[in-house]
Amino acid sequence: MTLTTAPTRRESTDERRLAIAQAARALIVEKGFEGLRTRDIAERVGINIATLHYHVPTKKALVQLVAHTIEQDFRAQEKRRPRARRSPRDRLRFEFEDQRDTMTNNPDLVIVMSELAQRARRDPAVAQVMQPLYNFWIRQLVEIVTAGRDDGSFRPDVDPMAAAQIIAGALGNLWRQLDDSPRIFDSITRELERSLLRPAIANKDTAP
Amino acid sequence: MTLTTAPTRRESTDERRLAIAQAARALIVEKGFEGLRTRDIAERVGINIATLHYHVPTKKALVQLVAHTIEQDFRAQEKRRPRARRSPRDRLRFEFEDQRDTMTNNPDLVIVMSELAQRARRDPAVAQVMQPLYNFWIRQLVEIVTAGRDDGSFRPDVDPMAAAQIIAGALGNLWRQLDDSPRIFDSITRELERSLLRPAIANKDTAP
DNA sequence: CCGCGTCTCAATCAAGTGATTGATTGTCAA
DNA sequence: TTGACAATCAATCACTTGATTGAGACGCGG
Image (cartoon, rainbow over all chains, first blue to last red; front, side, top):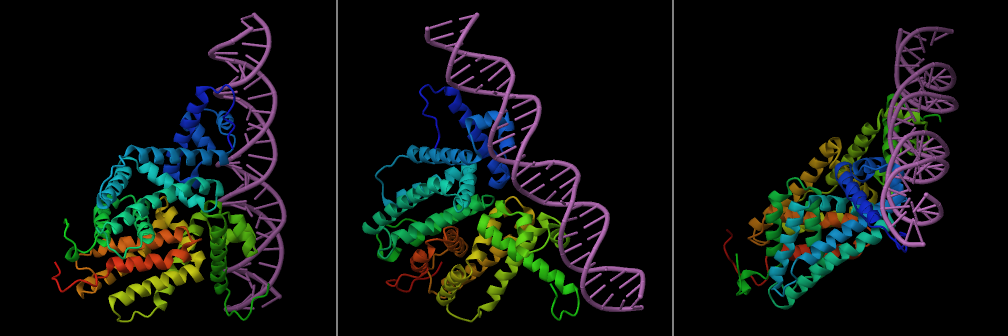
């Protein structure tokens, strides 16, 4: 899609493209995807519209660029956390912690991802980027739940795939009402945990 | 076109407004909110742009009109179902059934609601219409879960509000990926049910 | 200093895009 | 019949928006 594989590529181009993507993301947060205008992006970067079009030829390419930077941020954050060999419950808590961290420290990422997810329905190019991300997340959750079921710490009758979808849905729902979500985030994750853990009566290793 | 036996001309406006709203909703389904154009609406209704503006003065008013028709559909569907005095579990299943029914028979309603929910973040006028709808839904779920907890059929340690949010999130998430959702709908609702019901092995223990 | 590729911009285009204007038609009460 | 009014439309305005053009500026190897 992009012709960046020129023999001699200047650093400057990549920097500009990054700056453009950052500006675009900020504007998406402010005005939503439908309010995204190339002129606004150019103005925020401090360049001419034509210059923007030089670096990012079409708006379609711009959208894909934004999608890719989001993907990179997502994967970077994914990589940052230590994938330690913990108990399924701890891994689940890690997952929640990570979500909360993102929502608190990087709400823009969350908002833009929501917008992209919405757009993905109609834009195959965006869907092609976002779908793997979502699938990856689900897969993570499925693994955790499966491990928890198999080692007896979670309910034996849990359906890992369904549980993963429920977790993703519940957390994703918080994204969409980012305002008061910090208030209820903990109650949700705790409830999710309770709904997954094997009931206390039949379980010896219990914690409140 | 000659009108049928319409006693007054007044009705005509309401009919037009309804037709406009319907066309707008169809176009939102097709092209999304950002792709909604007044000209397209007028063309679909079969009227001039000016005529459209006669009935619905501004695009903002148009959006609010759509939001209100969605609200009416939602409430109509709400009213249609018999609010029988059933067990909490049956009421929950009824809720799921109702969701599935809407997704199957009225997917447009689901899509437009998703679009409106997204727009509500930036459009206070839309938020003012959609927020009560969401709150109403949550309240329904909270009541069901609370009743289930209190009569002992659900887990005694369930947090009704959190559980309601989880259910709403899980179902709402299905809305957003309407394509393959019929496949996984049942597994999700079943898992939700299992996560709420008091475990079968449980003996009588006191609720907190 | 020349030439070449990279990078930038002022100016402009063509297709929209919401909204308005002024005129016209059909219906009904007086 | 006629005046009032609801409803409609062709034409157009004022502005937006993605994209293009042609002219340069900057840096660097030769």
